[in-house]
Amino acid sequence: MQDIPGPAVYRISFYLRQLETFQRAEHETISSKQLGKALGYTDAQVRKDLTYFGQFGHPGVGYRVDELIGRLKKILGTDRVWPVILVGAGNLGRALMSYKGFLRKGFQLSAVFDADAAKIGRRFGDLEIEPMENLPRIVGQLQIRMAIIAVTPEAAQGVLDFLIEAGIRGVLNFSPANLKSPSDIFVQSVDLAVQLEQLSFRMSLGDPSDALPQDESRSVR
Image (tube, rainbow, N blue to C red):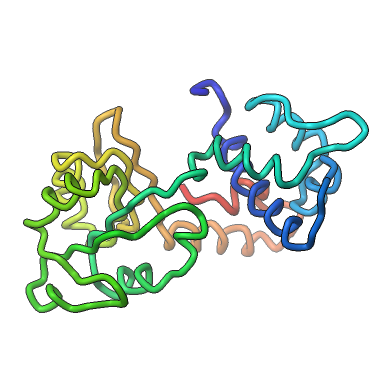
């Protein structure tokens, strides 16, 4: 699995999302050409990407939508529900708490933490903001291994180090900071400013044909 190209892994998420759209439209089967066309890829690209993970199609039928959705969810690890914690209850953190799409994709926001005493104890839906000192205990009790960081750049590295000590192994980082972590800790950073800069650069060229490939422009670095 470590030899699979990163762009192919990103595209698996897009395939899954499109397949779920086909499922809602009550499509029972789909071809690689139909799936690729819906996303702006070639049918050869679709087949190549899926081949990295096994054999999926059926001769004369194509892909069975329900079956392929199930297998792609298993590949991505979203065939189960992952409990996730959030560190940072500022404007971005509150927006993330309000997002309803996590559970649909297999992620349960289970606890929220902040270092600001003025925020601790406030409730947002079913979640109450906890002090940072409660984090190791809650992570252990709920067996949480995944976290989201939504704090200032200055605080982000310290928060990451604290999360790792508590047992977190995967982090989605919304802080515009270059974080350092051990090789066995997975950190995925989302820098909205960088994405806008890339968009601005492409637009300034004035040539739509020079746009980023779809898997690059949609994925977050």
